[in-house]
Image (tube, rainbow, N blue to C red):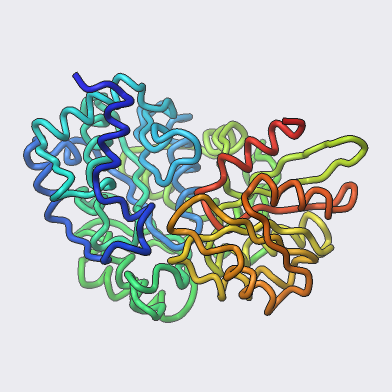
Length: 425
């Protein structure tokens, strides 16, 4: 039997778009994952799935939906990406990460019976097949599945139709999904299955039109989430809910609507279950606040992995709400396939200082090039050789009781959290 460490090492032999998007030709197909799963007996067909796509907010909607279903007593599976500190974060049953032993067993199943091969399949295909096989083995009641990239040709899009959820759509992954909102929405709409159900929110007219047309073509029901203007509050009508920020209010509205639809098709939950979920669930790297004290100075730190213009706009709303619009210090690192110009255009005006961190990844924007985008929208832009140095510099720059943020990528969040949780290290 393969050990956990061996499984991790061998997974690295598979083509990994997450790490090498700047090098790999963006060619996607459902054939590879379909072949693996067919040889495994199509485990993904053994339980209903809530399938979530979108440009921003899909992770939060997944967490809220899964946690509420679990609070109501359903045995849940959750598949998300990417991970922050441990690859096993991606595959969970009743919010418990897959064990190292089971991770290795699922790898063996996918490589053995599933015949996944590094020269034929991708890292994400292998992980997705492992998750689906694990959920079937654990006999879950329902799974919540987050798309990795896009929707139509994403490896997760082999699940049967049940409930699809599409969050806010914006410009991201243009080289793969298309340059216009209509094109991107068309790719996301690919998760809508014949005769199934879509929950989404009204947004840009082009997006609304594409999603409505897709539902008509697939004879799928469409439910719009309740309108929720930026800054609105949803907690007023959910007893016991904690304070939510503007960003989460929109995602909460989408999740709550999805839960209402699920209640009508056999998965009943209540607002009490939703309140419990929200009060006990951690949303890693999504509008995550920390307080860091060193010496006589205390600084609030916002950690958010947003890496596109819609995410940057949501962060600005959160910062205005929390700081009254006072300028902040930002540490930003980004991957080269992200639209750094658009991100800085949205984020830069909210910042007094931006420190561009060099990330330890071949796929990352060089800090000096990232700084050029930042200087178009912020007068004080600096460069740091790594994330730890950038965070130290940002802390020194930020006034006592001020605010600094880290944003732009998932792929250094583990180091930022280590820094925030161990400020004296």
